[in-house]
Length: 459
Image 1 (tube, rainbow, N blue to C red):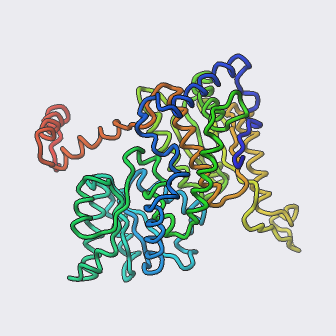
Image 2 (cartoon, rainbow, N blue to C red):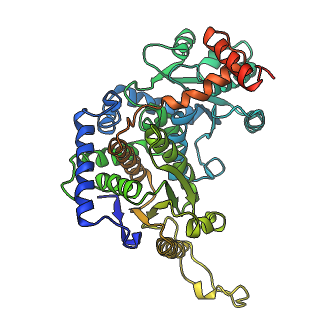
């Protein structure tokens, strides 16, 4: 197995034999419901067997051809999308390449993600970054009407049109739309203008879509080996397909069961995903969306948080060590170093670091991980450890599939539908009313806001 789950740093905060039997039976039942399609939201399980099937499709070949075109011709790719339409892709690019990807890339375009904010300053900063550069756009939206995405697309498409004046052909060949296969505003616009399109699968939510065209086109444009990424996910799919009979046989079931144990039996309310690699920070953001949208409903679910150590040991470390005991950690580690950079000896040991001379930064980082895990566990914040051999496309693909499946099993274990997210629509009702959008439903909300809060739209 590429991924290993260790409870070495749980400091004894583990289920008793009786608890383990009951919890694992629940995990196995949830796993079976997921595989058999008998659980809630079963129609949204398209991601479950997607990695092994997608590589055989014409669309996958089309994604690779489009990525090659963009890599050869563009200085910049703008990815316009929000939530699952950008988090997964950015997470993979930074995890496999670097958080400094845009400064260290070779022979591939810069990749910037927009459409995930309404900040004027952010738009202006991005304009400056791409000024004078030949940029392409990959707009990703199922409907084309999500506000943040639609505003950004309108803005940057206008810049593209200004750049090329009346040459519609040059504008249109620089826009790629990933959207619904059959309907929607964005699909209609793409068809009217001849943009190349790819499909947002209807049988998987955005947070589960990173291994589809939604994520793969920008990932491939950044030079990530998407064949290896999908191969890792497909191998994980095969490895975790059969429910385990007991702990130690299926890491997805084990992880879901332990999360349930800390949530239900230890009354933990927060799971912190920790890593010791800054380039995994965006993976933490993707994890937060995956678990937050999947489990956070009906007053249930662990609150997903993420940290980057050792950086955050100097900010949140105190709270994790001695604050309210509502936390447990899941730590991502990699066994092998990427570069083997070592500390050098100095004749004048003024900083007192010669005792580290010859040790690699990877060795030092691993020692920091072990020390932190021991300290936090002693402080009643147990640590689960997920270790992978190395940080590359294959193992990141494996990890993505692991989290997706474990998340779905976890959702079923706490009796929620892990595939819906109707709660995210609540703020939109108020926002559209405040912005003056026409419609009786918005008029009712405006009346409510004026009557109860003294708020009128546009003020």
